[in-house]
Amino acid sequence: MSEMDLTEEVHRMALEAGFTGVGITAPERMRDLPQGWVADVKELLSPEEILPGAKSVVVLLFHAWDRSFFLHIDPPGWKGYSFHSEDEGLEGYYIVYQVTMSKAWSIVSLLREKGHRAVLSTSIPMKSAAVACGLGCHGKSTLLLHPEVGPRLGLMTVVTTALLEVDEPFEGDLCGDCTRCIDACPTGALEPYSVEIMRCMAYASENPGREDIPADVRELERKLIARPTGNSFLECTICMDACPVGRVS
Ligand code: SF4
Ligand code: SF4
Image (cartoon, rainbow, N blue to C red; front, side):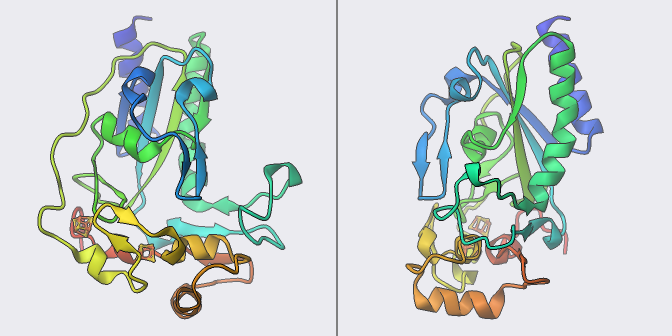
């Protein structure tokens, strides 16, 4: 199968699987993107660190139209990423990741059937990769903005040794003079294109055992974050909800 035919097949299968957008970039186009630790949240890796010999990165964008896609189900006794290592076998669930992972397996299977190696990954800088392949721009909220669905989305990537045709980076700015997300954030965590992670309730909720989260942020988190059960919470989406880009109601 030619590079062009396989690229078309990847696009077709991604749309059939229910993704709203699909873009492809190459590892060399990601050289200048942030790697390493980002804001104490996650260790980011390059495509080659995830899969030696990687030649393409497929970025898949899912329209997460309902707040319940942002439900987290923590394992019993969960205190946060700095307290638990993956080796402990604790596993939580974040619904939007579960949905995007299950949908993205069809792309992994296709590439493997064609003789290439392919893996799912959330460890590359996904938002920047999405900008690099034309799916949207960075918003002042630090969320990715897609022209049609705004920041209401989930991302998944497939790193593969298949050589695919790349898409061009997104050009333009969808924020303009708007500052609604910054104005709406109850903890004052946002400045244009930057989030103070220790003041973000999403981070606080993911790390219930951290004692260095400011007391006023913990207090607002207790008041504002919905906890359907003792082990679950709906991530803060206040800045997402405030965004006019792609909002239908
Ligand atoms: S997720 Fe919530 S607390 Fe965090 S920046 Fe957005 S509005 Fe602020
Ligand atoms: S709310 Fe306004 S400033 Fe914030 S990300 Fe959306 S468009 Fe940009």
